[in-house]
Structure formats: C-alpha cells, structure tokens
Length: 116
Image (tube, rainbow, N blue to C red; front, side, top):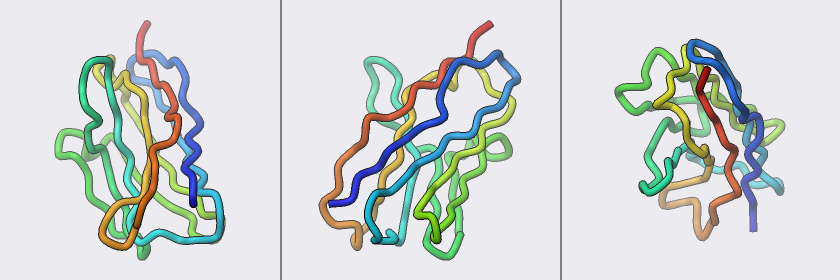
C-alpha cells in the first residue's frame, strides 16, 4: 500500500514562505492528489488538489497564495505557500483521493507554524 510522507514544515514569520513536499512511496501514480490541513480541535480541511495531468483546484481563500504542483517522474507533490499568515498554522497532510485511489491512509503530516 502506498504511503504519503510529508516534509518541509517549520516555523516562519508572517509574510514568509514555505514549500511542503509529499513523497508517495511505491510506483503507483495516483490520478488525484490533495493537500489538507488540520488545526487542533478541528477536522481536516481541504487546501488544494492536483490531477495527474496538472489540473489544479484550491480552497477559495487560499488562491493566489498557495500553489500545488507535482512531479510524476519522482512521485512527489508540492505545496508552495507564500505570504503566510498566523491562521495558516496547522498540520498539513497530503493524500490521494477519488474513486481510483482505493484504500489509502493518512500520513503523519508536517507542522507549519506562522508566528513572530
């Protein structure tokens, strides 16, 4: 079973940038990959998604600040985050989704903290 290994989180000041990476173990290229985030006490929320051919969708409030991309040759998915705000503080997860994904599990996530 494929696993999703997130990295790249850390602490950054408001207005700063981070790029998160998601390594998908195994050789399977999933049709749809998404980034999600979760703050303490809340459910995971959708951030962005990308299809195999590069089509993207975003949570409306994040458009223009976040950019999702993927490298199918490396089986990697990325999330570029710019102009970060304290409310972006969360644990960020990536995961395949959709009818073709099959049974997949959440990874450990990567913590992003935006503060002075």
